[in-house]
Image (cartoon, rainbow, N blue to C red; front, side, top):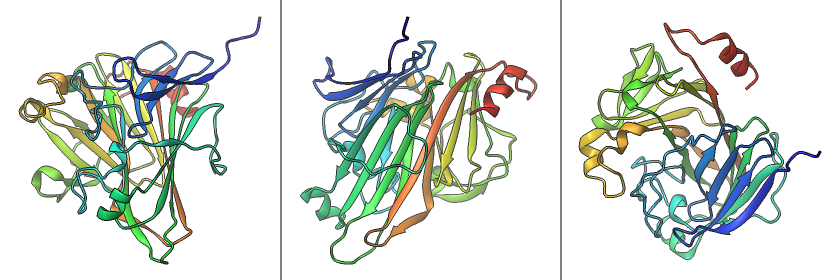
Length: 316
C-alpha cells in the first residue's frame, strides 16, 4: 500500500481568523506558518511532540507581533538600529511567492514560499525597495528548515544595509534544566549592560537569571540540551554568523502583557542572526541565509552524548 504523501494546505486559523499554511511531511512531522509575519508558530516532530513555544497570551492582532514561534527580524534585531523593536517584517502581512527563483541549497518537497515587499508605510521609516523571500520546509527526517533571500531592488542606485535574525522560541521542560553548547570562549554583546562586549567563560550556557545576548562569530552548529525532556535541539546555520540567546526571567515576564508570568520557565530563544556586521547590498545584489533545526532524543550525562545521538548528529 502506498504511504501517505506530504501536503501543504492553506486554511483560516479557527482561533484568530488569520490565514496560515499547514505543512505535513509524509513521515509525520508538521509545521504551521502564518502569512502575518511570515511566522512559523508550530513544529511537531515525527513523534507528535511540539518543539516551539507560543505564549498562551500571544496576540494575533496586527500590528502586535506574535509572541513565540520563529519571528523574522528584518531589517534590524532588537534596538540594534533606528527602527522599531526587531524591525517591521514580523508584523507585516506576507504573500505567497508564486514564482520563486531557484534556491542554492536543497529544497525539500514539503515547503511553502512566501514574499514580503515594501509598503508605502515602510518607505517612510526605511526608504529602500527590497524583496524578502522566505521558504519554510520540512525534511523527511522532520527537520525544520528556513531559508531567507533578500534583494535590493532600489531604482535610485543606492545600497542599503540591514541586520537579520530568526528569533526562535524553543519549548523546554524547565529553563533551569537546559544548557546551550557551542558558545564557549566566544565574545558576546550583553544587552542587559548596554551591549557591553563580554567573553563567555563557561563550557556551556546555563540559566539562573535573565539572559539577553548576541554571541558573535559562532560556529555553524549550536546544541541546546533539555535534560528533563531528554531532548536535544541542533541548530545549523549558513551566512548567519551570530547567535541570539534570550530568556526574560521572572521580573520581565510579569511586565510583558503577552507572556504569562511563569511561561519564561518553559521557553528559550536561540536563533541564528547577523547583527555585529550588518549586510550591505547594492542594487540587484541578493543575500541568502539559512537556519536548520533538528530535534533528537538525548540522554545527556557527564558531558557525553549517547552513541545513538552521536550517530544522529553525524547525519544532520
